[in-house]
Length: 300
Ligand SMILES: Nc1ncnc2c1ncn2[C@@H]1O[C@H](COP(=O)(O)OP(=O)(O)OP(=O)(O)O)[C@@H](O)[C@H]1O
Image 1 (spheres, protein in one colour):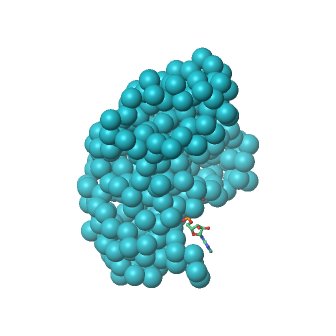
Image 2: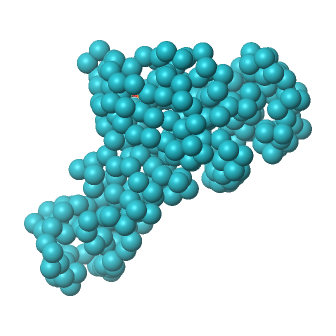
């Protein structure tokens, strides 16, 4: 009851949105599609939920073909699109009733599955969806996507524009849904959320850069990576970019992440170079790679 994608390509005129994408999502897996805006995530979701035809390739969802068996797929999947999934002028309860009705079910029939999520917005059941906060809208949209008890759930950037507390709660909800046997494909531009998935695919410009568990992706980072800091961060970046041995340089929170092209790199040498540029309070410490570092390396 997973997802299988074989050599899917899709173009919009001359934009190649997806280029020969292949991967599998195992039954009951929580799988993340991680990539920046425009990477092709929404296009892939739309193909897998039968809203768009691929130009090439095939895919199955819960054992059904996305082109030939589209009716079965629509019965068996839940889709929470990034935008426009709720009727803003309908109340919370009316939205949920609407989605239940089009799938030939009722809120009562499947209340168990959505209970955990819906109880949090039930006190506002008479409020129009358009008047809800970002976190509440997201909970309602998820309840609507689940009301027909789907086997596979597609969530397109569900936490974009949602506050950090609601984001954390949302991922806890996803874990609970997974425990109920639902296969989940979720996309996000947030690298920290990647670590919460069983496996992730890193996607950019319509191509898959890597697929693995979050731990393995980080473990295979090819070089030692250094946190570098000084009194003048802007000048620091410029000087590091001018340094002839740099392999990569980019801002990372309060630091700059630096890797060196040599295998026998000695940080003291870099320290001397930066001092010669009149930088002060220089700190250079080796650090662990993150998924974002892997992304930057693969996307180079
Ligand atoms: N209907 C369309 N017509 C033309 N180009 C499109 C269309 N839809 C998407 N694209 C282009 O295809 C590429 C992939 O877009 P897609 O929406 O799938 O990416 P995404 O990873 O979901 O990003 P976003 O989060 O910005 O939606 C982008 O270059 C986008 O501009």
